[in-house]
Amino acid sequence: MPNNLILDTLKTTIIRLTSEKDFEHMLTVIFIIKIVAITFSGFLIAYSIILIKRGRALRTKIQVNYAMKVANSQIAATPLEEYKIKIYAEKFDKIFEKAKTGSYENITLAIIDADSLVDEALKERGIHGKTMAERLKSLQNHNIKTLNELWEAHKLRNKIAHDAHYEIKTEEAQNALKSYKAVLQELGIINE
Image (cartoon, rainbow, N blue to C red; front, side, top):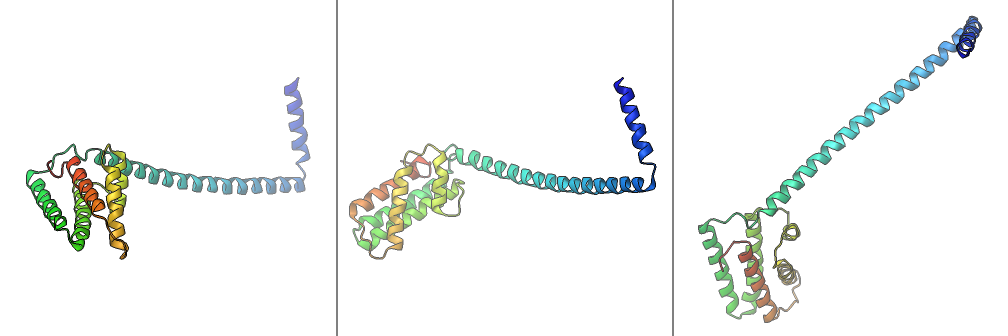
């Protein structure tokens, strides 16, 4: 019975549309529906392309971050060549001797030089970052026991370098130099 009702409705609709005006009206409605469907499809295609591009960019970013984490996790795992260890040790000994003179200028230069040496060593070990501070931040992913002391030493270096009126205390300088030496030892850059 319901099938007969559908057929009757369909017959009635066809008969009603047999007039020319109704037929033209129906063609106009169909044309408008086609335009809306094509426009909507275009928006969907454009949105899909945008999502694909964003997905690829995100995947690349995740892969780069993962590669950096893997590289950073192997900092001290790979031993440094013996001749490099010797060069770094000699450089640090010269810095330490400079500080031992007791001259204020030599102490401040020793802190700045030690900071530069550690920065050079971090680059040598493949720690990424544009600045020393960025490299120190990337060290947070590792179990570096002397990281907090290194941060303090680096802050002291920044005070010396950027504040002409800052007066470094001997104890501060000694602690900073000890921190620089400790992190170099922990990273396998110099021997104990």
